Length: 345
Image 1 (cartoon, rainbow, N blue to C red):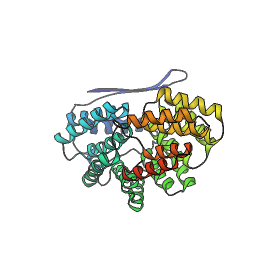
Image 2: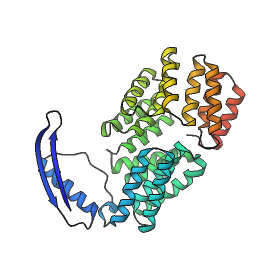
Image 3: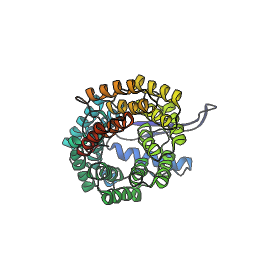
Image 4: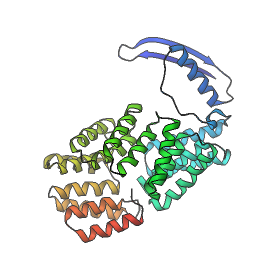
């Protein structure tokens, strides 16, 4: 196998450095690690630490690693179909190598992602817990596995001490892992410690400023902190990165509504409808409509979200928020009961 690495100054398109490496195609991960270290040494650059683990340094079957990479690709596509494919790839990889901790950690992440697109937490989070526990058992030093387990404890078990322990352990192993910083931020926000939470969000952005999924998660922290101008700013930055994502528009509409900016709310809400199709996003947008007096549009959109909930997961907490804005308190309380039962996130 031949790998050629080049360093080019983007603005001037100036060729600064190049090197070619030839290695036998035996152990892909070892080759990756060796070449990365040689490039770093050649450039005399000190990089941020990356996640390493005992399984990452061990011999890995090339076919299994392909399943891992294919699964990550599908997971990044962010659709119901792609999440299902990701789960399938990770399961196929585990069948070939049941001792690869990374595959179990990625499988846990895929199950968690399924709640965004179609499954209730009660359906998939127990599977996520099982996969994350197996990953930690196989490799206690795999930071991402501790993050996944932390999220299960935080959003499904509602076990705050256990969640804190897992997120802290992940940060001890790899403080530059964005999802570890964001996971701890979610934990802190859950406890109402928003200043500390947003400090962790800023760290996550520093390590990976282009991660749209992480930014979507962080937007909720900004919103629930009550910092509406900052929420608007962060929503706009996220939309610049991914204009086709619906949730940032929905949160933007909610933030504008909280600020009493009706024209801006309506524009953001219409954009959320135009690019988004998730029932939870519709419920969030409905609450924004209701807050600025567009009760007809709010009820119509909420009805559509509830109809889609027969096929896809709908966060009942957001439904309760919409009913509250509409003044339908009895329905809001019923939705909160449903949110409790479904472990709404």
